[in-house]
Image (cartoon, rainbow, N blue to C red; front, side):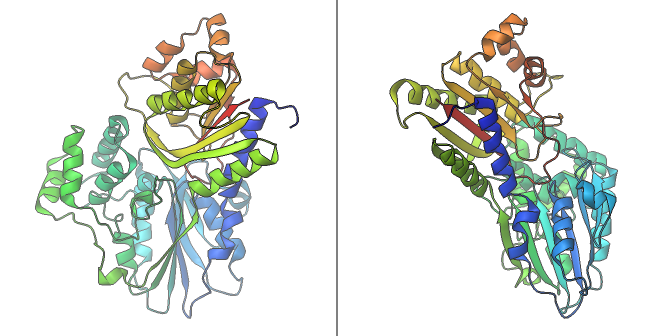
Length: 429
């Protein structure tokens, strides 16, 4: 095995994971043939711009193609921004929706009018679509949706819980968009950012039948103590906000394909590690829980490998994915799931020799900051103390971003134009 630079190696693994999920890499094998009628492309998500660009490049030039996709601000690939193609891409806010997203969702609804059985609707869906495709249910305002969304983000609720609520307070998600497209053929192409890769959860499943209920959404709001406007409460209590269910005739015959998943990206990173002469072990692509606590568990596993060669022998890389959460207990901090995980992990490791860790989000944005994540090693806490930084205080304030920024250990990639959620790599030499 060659000499290893731990931060460089970890970054290489992250890059391999992201590359495996790029739309231009995975799109081609999943596209259906052109229909007898026209092809309409609709979609939303952090990868939406790149997915639209990939479809536009691959679709026959002689075949009719049009549509509208909404993505996050600054998430349109530069080449497509400079030379837009046949599919319009608009930008909106994430993770809290804004008026641009509401207008885009309304336009998408309008584009579904007049579709026939000869037409094809390609729905391009990726993580982030819940906030980007925000069209409030009847009687609700965008400000209502913003307030509820913000409360969910701070509550510590899991992604499937958040999306259950979002579906039932929406006029477009939870299968409603798919129903609007009938009688056209609908093919939904998904990049998964959720544990378990459930199409009904990814971006709140705009084209997918929803097995959850208004009662489920109401229970989640009660569980986390989230108040909602009277109009929302009435809609949930009465069942007026119920979503299309499995077996709904409007969704019959629709095709749903997962074109990129967290597991595939972890496998790509593992292959890169093995090529470098390291053992590589994937814990799971479905890890959830409080970020700092998940960090402690990863630290305990790394110590067991380093000290006892259990359950794996060093040198090796331990990989995991999923979607952790941060329950915000102190306002004003700057950070996201990845850096909070890393701070919790680093504190638990206490300078354990030979252990290096990278945690980053595959979309290139950790929370709302400009970094994807950060790296840490055996000297992180000592370097922090030399700069007068207190890691435990930073963790309690949810202030991991300035902590790792001061150390020069942030991982900054800019938007990656895809999203298969959390990526974590623990290197034990």
